[in-house]
Amino acid sequence: MQIMGLLLWLEAVPWGDILVASFFFAIGGTLGSFLNVVVHRVPRSESVVFGRSHCPACRAVIRARDNIPMLGWLLLRGRCRDCGVAIAVAYPLVELSCAIVVGLVASVEVLSGGANLPIAWAGVSNGQRGIDGLLWQTNWRLLGICLDHCFVLVTLLAWSLFERNAQPLPTNWFRATIVLAVGAAMLWPMLQPVDVLPHSPQWLLSPDWLRALIISTAGIAVGRLVGGQLDRPMVSSGLMLIGAALGWQAVVAISIALLIVVGSFFAVVGRNGPKRASQTSDLVMMTTVYLLVWRWVG
Image (cartoon, rainbow, N blue to C red; front, side):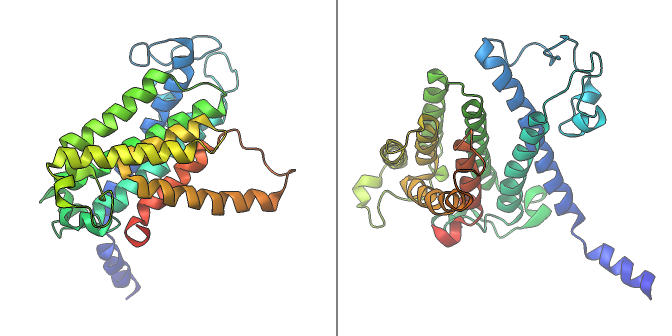
């Protein structure tokens, strides 16, 4: 009877969904590994595309088996295989953070059929959930929305690493990111979640590309306005990106959440508590939470 119960339990486990979620987490870890390369090379004006990863101390090329996100660092016990110099724990932590952020958002949005998205996006769901909705009746609109959200989160995480290392955000990178976010919304208006106002006049929302441009512009303006009240240029840039991709309502909600949740925590720990090198990392955290519960707070 116990064996039969175990078999029934194994049969009920959604192995396909677990496999897909694991794939999303693995993709996130790989993107985190790439972010480590970006943060190391950009300030040195090195190419982030060409040239294999190498040890900064001895310049030895990192072997493929040692370059597996998180696992490689553990197998090497945090030291270079060739020269033995210590590898900062920040590297696997970045990979883990990116894996969690991308893995959670992608898994929830795709496997739930967009159940976390606001009512305005209810039309993107084709009624299919889990791996069936991904393989047999692929919802390309939902995948596009998910890709857009992951792009925002990974970009914010990269900017938080620059802030942590006290490095300025390259102006061209910021401008290109904003243009890409606005341009994507204009080309695919389905990416825009909400209108400028609850009851915007129809003439203001037609054609679709103009509606997307207005929504993104309003989001950027509110992000700039809110961010201007802070003494953190990187956070201001992050809020403008959020506004461009998710609308001004997301900027307001995430800013309030940061003020209440993060501000309250550090008020409790006091001045002798942990010092934050990056407030943009708080922005990454709250944006992730916001996306996961968007339907119920937006």
